[in-house]
Structures are given as structure tokens and as C-alpha cells.
Image (cartoon, rainbow, N blue to C red; front, side, top):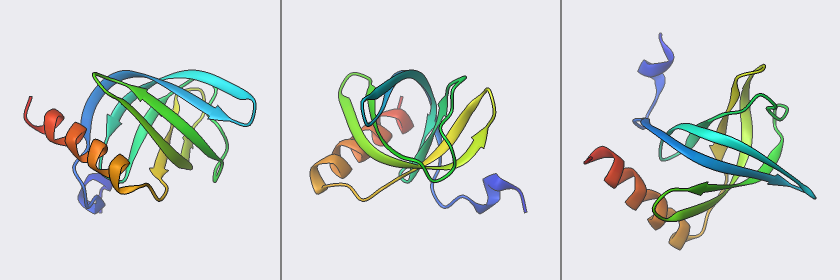
Amino acid sequence: MEASERRKNPRYRCNAPVKISWGQVTLDARLRDISATGMYIETSEPLWLRAEFSATVSLSERLIVRCVVRRVDEGKGMVVEFLEMSPDRRMSLNHLLWRLANS
């Protein structure tokens, strides 16, 4: 079964800057795609599996989410899953996904 067939939520292509923050370190990266449960972040310096961090996605609205790394593509990027989020942040994410689906 292909990965796209296993996905429960559609992914939407999206090119936007992302700030990755963990501890005192901040990295600049790019968002490649996003879904209701996670996103693919392009970076030449991906974090390690199961690393938890905060990501700030800068689109028309800023979205700040807590994430955990689920897959690393060395030198390319990483697949991250969203951790639990507040109802307000979930609503912001859903609004962003709706806009991407309808653009």
C-alpha cells in the first residue's frame, strides 16, 4: 500500500517560511505541505526522530504548533506530526486548510 493510500487526511502543497524552535535554538526552514495531522518541512538540517519542537508557520496568519519528528529525509527535510493543540489553534489550522483546499 502506498503512503498516499494510507493517509487519512489530504495534504495541501504550501510554500511558506517556518521557524523551528527548540530550547534556545531557532532554525529557518520551508513548509512543503500540510494536513490536519502534520506537515513536511524542508530543511538541510532536520532534527532527529521523536524530537519535539515548536514551529511557527508564516502565511497570511501565523500558525504556531507543537510538533514531533516522525521521519527524517537526510539533507532534505522531515515529516512532523502535530502534538495536542488548543481549540483556538486547531480552528486556525482548520481555517488554513480550508483556504488551501479552496484556492
